[in-house]
Length: 123
Length: 123
Image (cartoon, rainbow over all chains, first blue to last red; front, side):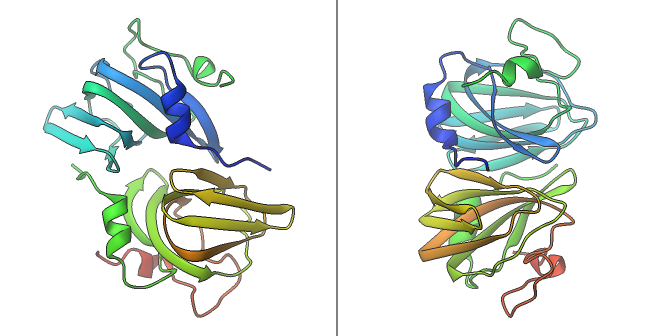
């Protein structure tokens, strides 16, 4: 039987920025948390929607049609195929729900890109 | 483009207990919130995992193998096929991630059971 998890506590404990970690499995999706600060990179996920839920701080999700500013307790779904770039002016802790097939930075690769295997490392 | 949503604010505004409402769509899943107090009913979802995330208060999820006590900010996945019964000794606000095919109380039907159409009513 799975255990209860505290996404907030796990996000707080992370030491590496922009490095999502899997905290639970939900059918064909993963529940992840990340600690972010600064900018990730413009990318899209052609086949998967992506849920952001803000655990602490603020996150701006830039998209070509405009940006969304999220604060603690707010959620936003980036629809599949929509290019986006997450920007955190200050440290932000986020919970993500992503399909298992979702690549961190889509077809882009940067020094921040983390493989699914890296995201699955034990906490 | 979808809007940011505040699951906490929406859950707070609900007037009917045990009546989940859809706040966002995520591929083949819905993000829902509910205000609960008391007991739902023993049931299972044979084909779908179900994520509970506690927005406010406490929730006990009783299962045949034992119960899990969840407090604000904690998450728990009830695996597919596992009979469970959510119990809130005091008012609790919860965010749920469920597949679109998930029935509220599985194959059980009680006066608390809400159809997916009812859960999709505009907020």
